[in-house]
Length: 194
Image (cartoon, rainbow, N blue to C red):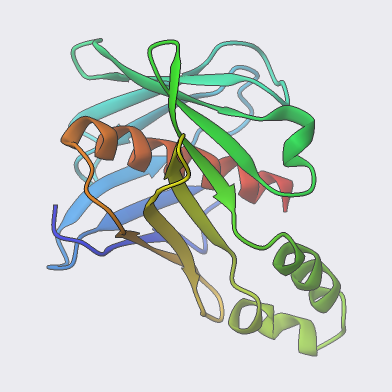
């Protein structure tokens, strides 16, 4: 994949839809989340027409704050999982990325005050519509030793939600798959939280 990747939420969609394109403008992933599902099941496609499934994400339980989301490829082979750190994620978003049962990576919100300032700023009449330009969260993906390997940052924008994903350190192809799928799932969950 040619980095940086740009992740964009479709603005005028009832169900969340995400497209991920590489630095050359080629579509890498397309995600459409189904509405009104008690047990989350998401398919990541290689095309916008949703004819070529690449990955599947399935929750291990029905609507839960600390559900584990397992990833499989189109052949059913296990790739990894992501899980929110429960109550520790109330203040600062934190997720663990698993390879089997072992936590090898984690995602953490860099500055939790951005989320609070964004919520307060959004409540101001008229001025609140510009919140997408002012407050932009950053999420860091790091190894268990604290080494940051990837960075996801919201791009200032008026109506759409756009993010860039940039590598910071060397990672394997398997880790890159785990990280990208985890970041997509994390953004869907954080979007639902506000």
